[in-house]
Length: 416
Image 1: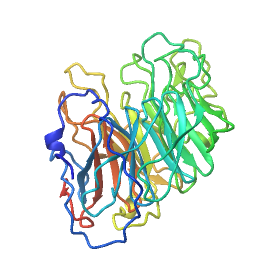
Image 2: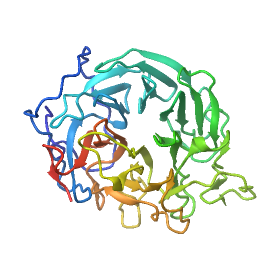
Image 3: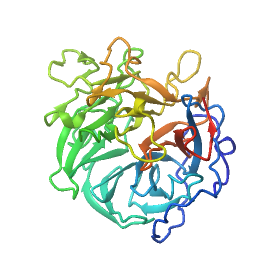
Image 4: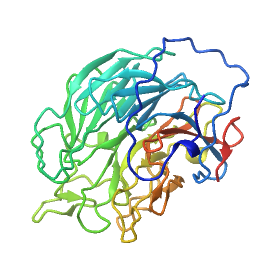
């Protein structure tokens, strides 16, 4: 049972809470047969939070510094954190309250923010390493095996904007890892920084899939095509409102795909005098500057389960935006935390990118985290559960939210 709902646990401000103290571990237990729901309901989310009419949102777990998410086939949920622990939320797809979160694994270093599931393994990415954990259905803990190293070289930048997180996605037998830069704007000397790396699921054969990408994060695999998409953050302190943030199908380009940072961004705009931007990749989806993409997940076109969304959401991309730390003249952060939805058709965004309007391709889905200068949370990871629920993490409130169509669940309240 949760000790408190979001309304009692969250505080204002935009600072990130530290990761929670180590949670108790548990031994594997068999997955029970389905039975009629008679247990407790999950607490409703804060009434200021909003999802579209016809959906309900509840809080199923409190996890300090909750970051990226990975859904497991049996309905459990893996949560990466800003600390060294990876957390599991058993029975996240329960009709009512999930079981209490447990420590799934402890990594040699943090932040253990990047998590992915595929090929029978849970993958975790930290500041310095890539790890895999063999997964058996119903297991609530696992043995950590290092398979690759990142950030093996020196820091090139001196502007203090050193990214320490990495992200992961699996497509078939290939693992993709996004590694953030050592600066806001510099020429990297470490060949793994500001890149997306590609390797086998054993970590062998690591090579650069994409380069000159300031902070490749929010990796997501489109289940209909196997294409891996990734989110990118533009550099700071340039023209007001620019450059935009973006999502792009990183695995669809020939390696190493060149994204141009810090010289060329957006629609091949040169931000360094004399830069040749003619051959850099033009991203497929745009978001406003300083949106800070953290997580992304495709909603499968043939999603099974009692909590599956309607066909209007099939094949589309949910993108979790952390919101900005940059403020406008009125003191308000220029972009609020939220989850957006990008409709897709035929494996591509249904609306073409509009370089005059970075809001044209998507619609808001989960909002209400910011009121003026006050914030009650900041969205991070997002994933789709085995039974169709959408899960969203929040590293400021330390919450994991579960969103379902109204009328399909026995818990939560309609947040329109």
